[in-house]
Image (cartoon, rainbow, N blue to C red; front, side, top):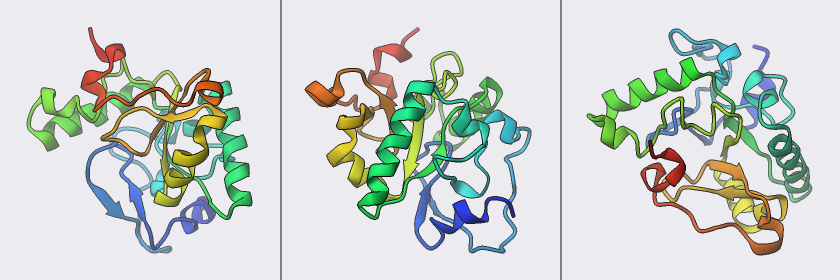
Length: 191
């Protein structure tokens, strides 16, 4: 499998589900049958096969991120690697079609559009669709970012999504802004 190296970095640990749902699932062992993409979407839509990839990946989920976010992410990943911490991108840029699929799945999982909105944005409001958000793992990477991320402008945005990071101008000087409880409290998500 082409992504065996990226998956190998996180096998044996846990990965955040790409839908940003509350469920955290163990990754399959190398060599196990892994669906390459969810039904109806492809890697060209931003799917990250196998649950994770590197920040140097050529997958659209990484390459289609906003250039400033990608630069900050790669700089931070390099510094974290010097500390023995590896970043895994579990989700990044997503097509509108992929985002809508994730939203439909979240509604089915959580029972209502209102509850699903705490976890998955619409394609019109998602920072993933605009390339302005990245979901990262494992826990060691998120811990490293909690301590050092502001220096690179990388900030956790939602308290309920410790894997979701966005670039915040001025964070290196002023620190990251306060987090929203979940996306329903984010004014950018309001109609």
